[in-house]
Amino acid sequence: MHNQDQQLIFEVSKPGRIGYSLPEMDVPELDLNGLLPVGYVREQEPNLPEVSELDIMRHYTALSKRNHGVDSGFYPLGSCTMKYNPKINENVARYSGFAHIHPLQDESSVQGALGLMYDLQQHLIEITGMDEVTLQPAAGAHGEWTGLMMIRAFHEANNDLKRTKVIVPDSAHGTNPASATVAGFETVTVKSDEKGLVDLDDLRSVVGEDTAALMLTNPNTLGLFEENILEMADIVHGAGGKLYYDGANLNAVMSKARPGDMGFDVVHLNLHKTFTGPHGGGGPGSGPVGVKADLIPYLPKPILTKRDDKFVFDYDRPQSIGRVKPFYGNFGINVRAYTYIRSMGPDGLKAVTEYAVLNANYMMRRLQPHFDLPFDRHCKHEFVLSGRRQKKLGVRTLDIAKRLLDFGYHPPTIYFPLNVEECIMIEPTETESKETLDGFIDTMIQIAKEAEENPEIVQEAPHTTVVGRLDETAAARKPVLRYRPE
Ligand SMILES: *Cc1c(COP(=O)(O)O)cnc(C)c1O
Image 1 (tube, helix red, strand yellow):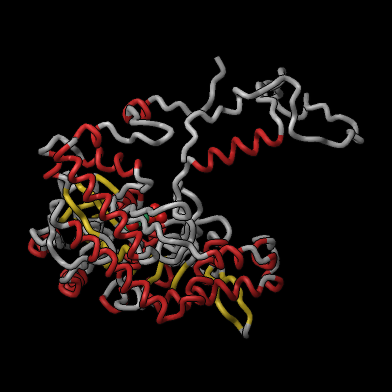
Image 2 (spheres, protein in one colour):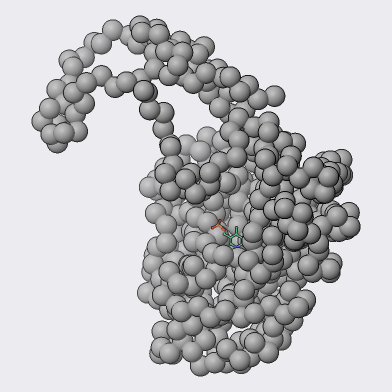
């Protein structure tokens, strides 16, 4: 239950009420003037609320209840893999030997941590079928950019300077064209065919001597496995280009198929999706990149290697694209991913894939009679519905998403991918029970009925949340981000 009347902390403030106690000052007071530039030293007391410890406790607890997270409810946000992150990951990440070390410590004193990173790299090499892996990139998009910079360095080293274009299907994740642009390439879009897969004729017509790489999101953002990968690999490699695999959604193929075996030269993974690192809100992630042998010289430096049974960082990498992250990546996420891989084991990881795909297909088939299904094929870890039937009744996909909030669900991804009208992209993940899936399906069916019988209730949703329907334009253009006393 939400408490709509929860007072803001500023409103319960009483002059003189405090929630802390400090010992008497026993050192001389520092004169900040002179230490800090003029204008940086506060001249007046800040206008802070004066409250007790209990008041502040209740304030933050109330705020936390207004948030939706995987730990509080179902979160079928397509393409984001908001699955449950086992708490054993957190326990291990907090071991003081991992949590309390410093990145500048001498290598000899952190052999355990380096060993974990090395082992994680070996596991990811095995899972992806690549020859080497870097753990430096901090996110999926960062991994994409890192991979493309390596491809660029490869072509430059071969004096193949006309390769300025990266081919990106229209069913790719939105970060792909963005990363290609930031890496200095021009992006070329290839169309999907009526089955929702890359149109091979269109691909053939854009591939050429100026092709640096093809970036393939697989399964694509429609949740469909690209059937013609080996043919695509022939087309692109035949023209001298490289193949990039966006493996952020490895949940769908892990332990079943490996990008390295399909002919890909580079792949990135999202440890903060498939491998249960916490994510959301732009928090720290990890986007390791795997490469085939001919790209190893360009990996970000330092690379972690084993020499005489010791783990060492090797900086002697003359062809490296350089460092892409201060220190060595987001180590805490590596610990979580390592714990996950080791606690699941190979059979566990295979089961993850099977249940992720089973759950998505189960939901898709139960929802099919009630919503339009633009691509009626076996899906992988996610699927895409269209709200065009409901739109004819005056209920838009945005309204359906808002109505789901009334039932305690995080909405699916909406209006993406762009090639589906009134798109609803649902990813149930493998960690949810059948009861949870059925609860969500029944709610979606109820909302479809409401759209027919009582559209206002959907159009005006949400009704039970602390904040109602926002003016989205004003919220984006004139955000109110802090409390201002009158
Ligand atoms: C999430 C995602 C990305 C981007 O990952 P970030 O960590 O958010 O940068 C890229 N590609 C696909 C397919 C994704 O699902």
